[in-house]
Length: 146
Length: 146
Image 1: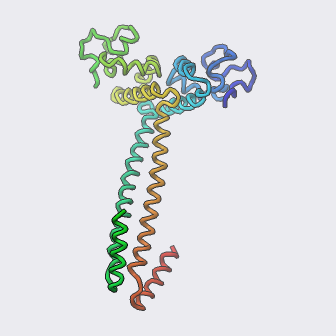
Image 2: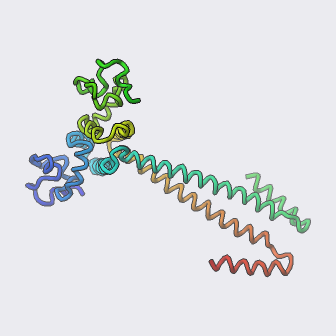
Image 3: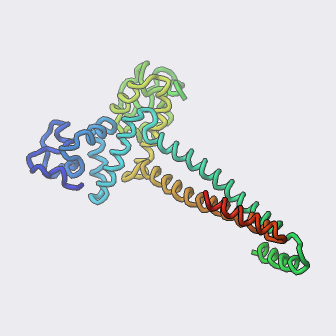
């Protein structure tokens, strides 16, 4: 994605400079990440964070981290535009609820496995012959000595 | 929390107006949520979103939703200050990984339950008589024909 903002030539301003109505300098910090053909991408970021703040945030990062930072900033901005009250914190809350639910289901399934193992042991050791009882007793020892 | 910014009297500016060095009007949109005794709370929000953007975001919401909006904005701002590259999108990514892991563990546990049920049934119907052998054959068919 980097440098894609320059695809249309050096004279074409990036989406950020177009929106801000300013000259897009050759070292514009936005240009590599906000190409002119994706105006909405910068519009959300500008509305939520403000161009000046995003400029500062990007300038404070080394270049190799800026692309990831822009992706997360765009994600956050879009989430806030969609949900002005909770933004992407709404997604965090929903994911945490999913985790709680999965942990409960997992605990139930694991408890069932333990219960069935005990049941299986109990039912398979029903004495049919004296030999079977002795065998089962040995198996029981190895199971519980783990 | 609402109106807590006014606890120290009408003349004491809220944390936002203090940082912005402006008069804190009686209808200041920040005052109910950014009390003077929690300056860091507004500082992070101002650094990440900018006072002007947060002002607009709050003005666009009905009053009963502003407290939740401020909580989520403060959460996002603090996450971005802690992790300037991923912000709270880092938390989303981590929660999604946890969900993937829990779903895998749950599938394994549930498969084990199914496997043990089949085993349990098989072992409990170990042929002692000819009748039992016939039963097994019938059950086998009904299980595998699903």
